[in-house]
Amino acid sequence: MDIFSVLNLIGGLALFLYGINVMGDGLKKTSGGKLESVLGKITSNKVLAVLIGAGVTAVMQSSSATTVMIVGFVNSGLMELAKSVLVIMGANIGATITPWVMSLSSIGSSGTSVILNLLKPSAFSSVLAIIGVFIILISKNTKKKNIAQIMVGFAVLMYGMTTMSDAVKPLSQSAEFGDIMMMFSNPILGTLVGVILTAVIQSSSATVGMVQVLSTSGLITYGTAIPLMIGANIGTCATCLLSSIGTSRNARRSALIHLYYNIVRGILFLVVFYSINSFVYEFGFLSDNATAVGIAFFYTCLSIASALVLFPFSKLFVKLSYLTLPVTEDEAELTGLSAKLNIKLLDERFLSSPGLAIEQAKKVACDMAAYTKEALFMSIDLFEEYKEKKAKKVIDLEEVVDHYEDELGNYLVKLSSHQMDEKDSIAVSMILHSIGDFERISDHACNIMGSAKEMHEKCMAFTKRAEEEVAIFTHAIKDIVNMAFDSFEKADMKLAANVEPLEEVIDGLNIEIKKRHVKRLRKGKCSIEMGFILSDLSTNYERVSDHCSNIALSVLQKDEEIGNHEFQTELTSKDNEEYTRKVQVFGEKYALPKKSEENH
Image (cartoon, rainbow, N blue to C red; front, side, top):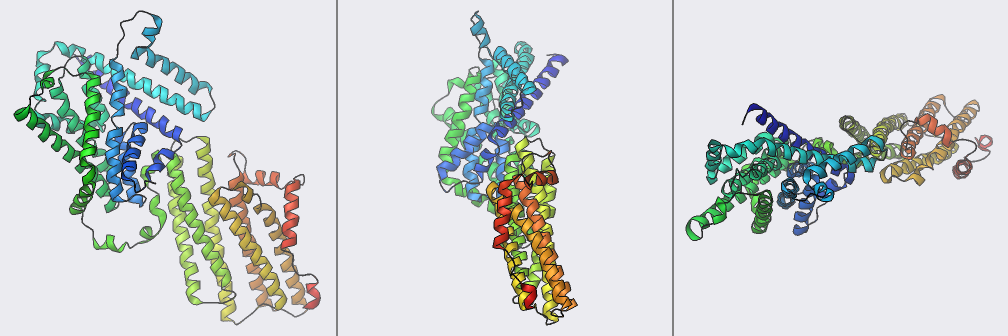
């Protein structure tokens, strides 16, 4: 085997790994993040948890990707540690689909017809690559492009397998290489080699694929292949362990469970299998040349049998992880802001799956909105009954909202650097714009609280007529906040369409209330100092409604190229009869008392 054969082998491995990655990305994009989000909604049904783990991994074409996702869910508090064991068991079963796909490269055809030749893996993958690339180049449909990406990924995977197979063919004539492979038939040595090789290349599928490649050239027996596959299962835990660095102790326990499960099932199989082979019945097939299909079959049987045997003992793996990482005092107390808030849902492991990351970001943004609304409504209530404790809470809530904006903003910026389809890109933009408005509304809540505090400390009060007008204004503000925030949370276009007409009515209320105050001031029915407070309150109300308008427009807007102002102009056009009707309805609902200036 010369240097060119070695380069072809390495190049084939690189193409194989790239093909798996491309195909997996295409499958994830096609699912729109729904597959991964299913992992975070595992029920108490243990069998279902295993099946979901298997199904998600089969589609994602990577047990490492699934287990890294599991670490993220445990770190975020979305998945209990006990459930992660079951999903990990399923992930190991789902990972066996890849060797079956790779075994297709070993299928040959002795036929001479065009149809039979097209069914050969090399020809079939070439056809898939041509079709896939053609669709990617000419199609504008995102779904079609994602399917085409799966086709191209599969073609590259198969081509990499074929390249590796061609590279190792000269080795079939090498007696020295045959002797080296025979050394790996030693269960302990073979397992260690499988562990090291998989830990280095970060893919058990690649290790199993290389074993399958060697089998196509008659270079490996089942006696050698089996220990290497056992080692591959253990070595793949390196990815999960690395991903758990810097996470919560529970997330690190999840990574350890993955390691312990694969070590236990590997040791259990080696002890039972080779004990039977040595003392009860000698397995003659161990000296037979392995086949790609035979390797895939064994790999599947091993994973299913391991899950069936260890399924009743799933809780023992949880206990073992707690023995390794005991509960600390800090963990028990769950102190710190991130432990109390849902910001921990923003796990960077989800960034590789934009659909899932957006779903998590939306949940956190909805929490941020809830804190913002609580701060605003609490500050408004201070005008009726001022309490220092509530005023302090408004400030605390504003700090919480600021913290949310920082964390969410940074997370969404990182997410924006990943490749996304148009729908996901618009969703990220909508959340990013809205959280800025939530933060500004919380600032206005503090301003309103300050006005209430000043009135309380100076023992001032609104006139009866001003109080009636402020009550109507307050009612309108609470309604527009509820509309805008609910439309954001539920993505309710119909509800969002009501915000802009109400915002126009609120603009009118702001102007009219200030005019009426000036008239009262001229008649000596209101003080200048009280006028400043009323003006500040009215201005803050109007600014809150502006931000609510921005939030609703972000929900309604489906085209990033159209600016908010341009979209708003189009929406509020005089030709829009529905908009005009809504303005009239809201105007009547929030009309100020008539002839107020005569009764001051």
